[in-house]
Length: 92
Ligand SMILES: [Zn+2]
Image 1 (tube, rainbow, N blue to C red):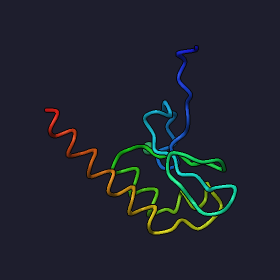
Image 2 (tube, rainbow, N blue to C red):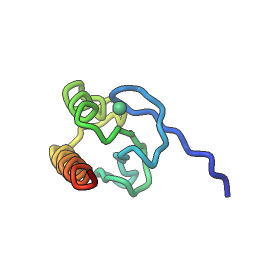
Image 3 (spheres, protein in one colour):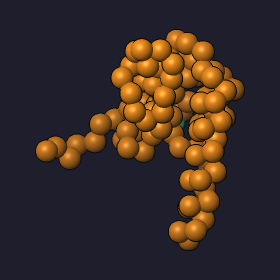
């Protein structure tokens, strides 16, 4: 087993990060879209408010995946942002 991280580029800020630290949005080969799990073209996004907003405003996910991104995907990511930030506050 290699411990070398798999690096992926955030579609918003273009930074290379360990894929474990990024959200993965997948355009499924069989149609539709998914988060985290699935086979198909993938786009990666930092788990931060700024990258989420940048990606949404500039349609970075649409461009990376070359398809429309449903509002439900953004809603799901936005909910994760709130979960992540409240979990971080609790840890402190
Ligand atoms: Zn980013």
